[in-house]
Length: 274
Length: 346
Image (tube, rainbow over all chains, first blue to last red; front, side):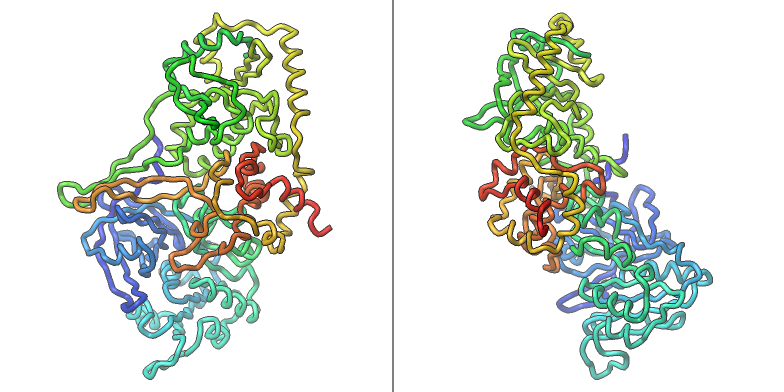
């Protein structure tokens, strides 16, 4: 009998970390498969998480494939399923099926400088690819991160970002001025123009809200990046994850299968419906 | 395998097929639909076409994927629920509806086989009935690589020759049905073949509606993505979604959890048909909606069928059954829309 793609595997939540509180809370969950061997995945791929009785939600895997003993998901409380995930405790069981999508073509980026540009919860998919590149740092050129959130309280992975400064250049921003804030104030696309990353031998990867992505790409183009040097991830509503239910369809693509990772060279030729 | 079956022998053939679960067009009020048949005499092939295509037998409007509950140790446990193994056959499948299943086959196959779809698909024999006259005034199969006597997707094609059926078996599954009642079938004679040809030719001529130069439509649609045309065409749409619910090729669905008891947890995960014509189909939980208006949703229906599907699977995702035209409450007519597209801006 072939595997049934709609049946999730059971996993146990082994750790929950509160990243951001307030009205737009974010928590990071680590899960371990209960019985079966898990699955191997590529950075940038997603998994469908199940809270039984509530439903399923497609979430990007924020841990690196180099980490073998757990899967990590950083989740903004937003809809029905993500809200119920936020109510769970360590030790609770959720379903996971996947991995889905194409992932980042990180093998093709060897020898290049990597500029990661994230906004809000968009740091989650970046986190996986960033740490995969850092795990083989000698294979890549200079690695840097430009990341911003609405306020200093909305920044995810705060401690980890401080540790990251020991290894790579990290440029943070918040949208509006705060008394203690010493770094950039303004939207992420503006910080990109301010830091002026060089397009020479570089690949940029940007993840965040659709409006941020739009202006980041515009500004990267202004800095001289070619379409093939700009990568992003597309988020669309998904139900099946396997290219059948039709929700994430844009043009001839199903984002769950053919995406979520696109170069701007590919994405600009698809209908702008994301 | 080609045979002749006298019409009076038809019920006897059906009697021999009792090991199958048999579906056939059944009249309820003024409407025909495929229903399970208990007696061979109940089959009446004097219908035009059914409201819903036999897609609903292979891919039902609602089905259970799995059941979940709380196990003894307090953790959730899940049980896979697959369709029963039960050989089925469908009588009176129109050629357009059979072809439609060859299109949904492509979607439900690929890298991930949809086990629910394939279990039903593989155990179902499709016995077609050619259309001597168009079942609907809006039939346009000839415009989308089909015909009123197309064999595509069928196991058997029956053609009505008046007092007898011309029966062509096209697959192993079909041969098996004929072999169960060998004595009832006769070898076709030259006259039978001649009559068949005559009827087929006449049936094509009776189809009045057409999309002109369908081949030119996909590249034209690609150019028209940002055109105000879609606002004009979608103006009257009341977003009821009937065009997609009745379509034999539409396959979009929702997956949701239904809870019977929250403590201890008991419920099931179900798949139900869904439609790109509903506003919340693409709406993110943030409220952001990539297809926020009627125009973008009508455009999605038309482009998915006549551009995207062509690009991905090399076929129109439409078999010309005309249901979406006949049943649209505000008269949106895909033939008219596409004929306007072809000449738009020239």
